[in-house]
Image (cartoon, rainbow, N blue to C red; front, top):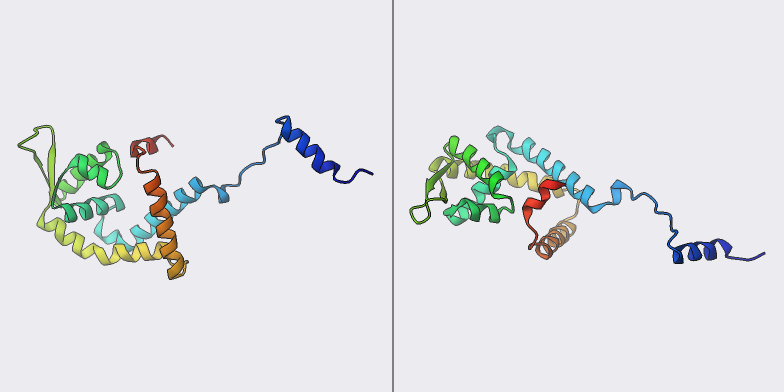
Length: 172
């Protein structure tokens, strides 16, 4: 009989818009994999850094402040790609533990200027090796070459979407 009739039938259905969509397995969806990888990294961070009672977000804030020395909360939120409200809450928790100082900006009374306290700088110095260990553990199933390529690819994706508001992630 007619060879390739199944292929011809599929092509005809496709032309008419009658294609049947197969489910997309979670294990192949970038968004799912990125979320799982984040969950895995947070778990590894807590295993390595649990004794310091600090979250990865708080660690990022302390790290950003160590580089900037002094910064307002909006700048810090942009540095760590988070919304200002979440960033402010984390900074308040760090201030309550005397790791960060938050002062009203003399030039703009609505803004708060933040800087590391000596206790915050000491904590950052103590946690650094453990945090780096968590970062290495996140990628340890890859060769050094693959790790470098993976980090490069993540940086390219982030850079390509850097104009997106990080607050939209709250609606996932």
